[in-house]
Length: 187
Image (cartoon, rainbow, N blue to C red):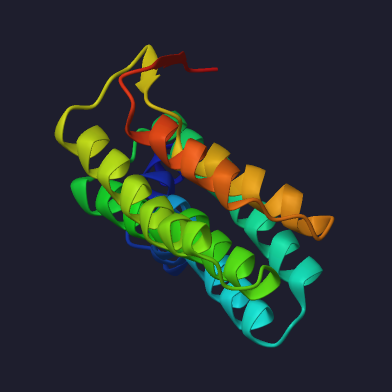
């Protein structure tokens, strides 16, 4: 009996060392997953830009929607795992500006011919989205969004572009909604 206790009390056996290493690697992977999803969001936004520049508008729209899926899960996963950080929040905002601000704007501009209204939409949409994200980062809210979330605005433009419809007027309205004091409940 005493021999059995001596064996089980040894903590530096090769098996225990490998189990500890495996557990450490697993913890690193778990801690990095929300940021990996945020980077996947950014990557989808970049692929959307590439697709728009090459005339593949439907694929561009689909990449924006795929970025929205990644964006949906990154924050929820970080909160569920209790792995929130300032870097993660800032990285998420930067990814959102590219995926839901710049990518939809380039997509819309690629589909629609030049007009004065399109130039206003081209400038106002990503600027309003960046302003909205900066405002949220400076003054976060927990029960509601202040202004239309940039993700929702970007998805609206992408859905319309999926059917080859672009309206600069709708983009300007979405930009105004993003910077408005409108309170939208979180779900």
